[in-house]
Structure formats: structure tokens, C-alpha cells
Amino acid sequence: MSGTRLDGRAGRLPATAPSQRPLSGRPGAHGAERRPAIRVVPRVRRRIACAGWAGIAGICCYSWFLFAPLGGGRLDTTRAFVSELAVPGSPASGWYRGADVAAGVLIIVLARGVREWLGRPARGAMATAVLVGTVGAAAIVDGVSPMTCAPSADPVCRRIEQSQPLLGQLTDLHTVSGVLGMTAAAAAMILVGRRARPVLRRRWVMWVGVAGCVAVLLLGSVLSALALFDGPGVGIVERVQLLVVASWLGAVSAMLILRRPPRPEVLPGSQAPRSPRSGRDGS
Image 1 (cartoon, rainbow, N blue to C red):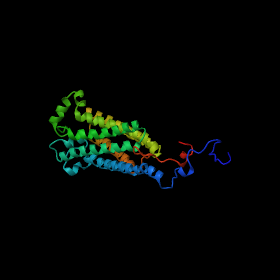
Image 2: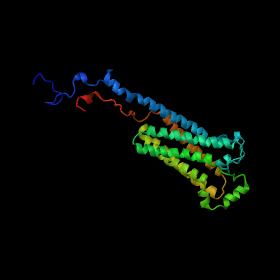
Image 3: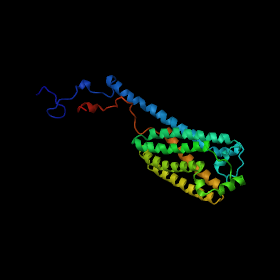
Image 4: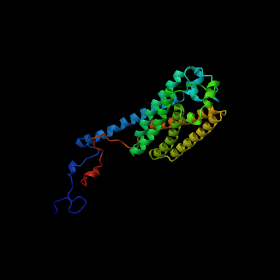
């Protein structure tokens, strides 16, 4: 029929009238439909940025051992474990244990932001967040269950520690939390680097994670050997390992603060923005 307007294909009438097609720049019913899906993005970005700032605060608490000389700590930093500074009865030990707990809580908040920032697939993002949260949980355990004595400064404590079998030392709660936290940090470096590469569009992000993982594991091996044979420098190696983890947490926190999420999220029941072309084919 000559009076009938065909839409692209012969014999097919337009699914909607031209006046009913959604226009991107026209306010009205369709604009009201799209608005909830757009407004959620700033809220998600603020939530992710707040998690990043919580991570920055957590790093400051996590690195409390750098300020130990200001608190009156007199242990030999080359031979003393960081945890020896938090032994009950030591100068400012209560503050150090509180800093461990605060660091753990703030790192767990950071882990929540990492999960939202990485987006989909949800399973991989959740696994990454669990690993980051495990680092925080290990810090909380360190603060709640400190060492009972300082082997580097107390000869009796050192003899008691050396008299324990290897299995007994490895099953100590404080030792288990430290090993578990460092292992989780090493694994999280790989996963965050791998999943953040497509988000940031930078290939080097993954290799930074790999380098951090190798450094943490290598320093952990050296630390275990020095502790087993009572070698010098155990305190220096442990502090370097902690600083590597703190630096990586700082990099992740900065990425959450400075970068937007990979894709906007849509509130339940809201309609995502549609292209004006979607009304032409009936979809």
C-alpha cells in the first residue's frame, strides 16, 4: 500500500509510533524511568572512595611499628619481631595492640570496596575481597592474641621458645595468624593485579602484583629460616615484608579513590538506559 510507511523491512510496520519512541534528550516518562539507574553511580563511587580512604587509615595503623621508638620501645630492631613490641607490660603495648585491631577492621572495609570496584564476575571479585579481608582478620588476631613474652630481650622466654617442638611453634595462634595473613596478601596481589588490569587498562598492573607476591613469599622464606636458626636480621626482614604489604594496600586504596567503578550498577526494579534504536525493532 502506498499510504503505509514501511520501517526498514518490506511488509513490517513499526513496532511503536514515532511519538512513542524514547528520546535520549527529551524529559518525560522515559527520562524518569532512566533516572534511578543513573543516580546510583555517584553513590557507588562515593562508597568505593570511602573504602579507599579507610584503607589509607588502615595502612597508618598497620605500620605502627615505625613509630615504636617514639613510644619508648627499646628492643633491638635487628633481632626483635614486631609483635614483641606489643607484649603486655611493654611501653605503649596497649596502643600497639589497639592499632592492630583498628588496622584489621579498616582493611576489611577496604576489602568490601575492592569487591564493589572489581564488579563482575561476582565470584572472582568475592574471592579477591575475601583474601584482602583475611589480611585484616589476621591483624585483628595479632592484636587480640599477642605474644606473652619477648624472646629477643628475655633469655628465659627464648629458652622456653627454643625448647618447644617445631610443630608446637607452627600451631601457635599468633604464628598461624601471621603466616595466614601473609599468604592471603600474596595471593590477593595476584588476583587484584589480574582483575584490575582490564578495569584500569594497564598491563603493568598485573606484573606489579606478581612482583609483590614474589617479594612477600621470598621474604617470608628468609624470615622462617632466620627464626628457625636464630639468625641475625630477623627483625629487619619482617619489617621489610610488612612494608611491602602496606605499600601494596596503599596502591589498592589509591586505585579505589582515584578510579571509577568498571560499570554502573542498576538498582533493583529500575530500568537501565536504552538506546533510541531499541524501540524500532520491538525489543
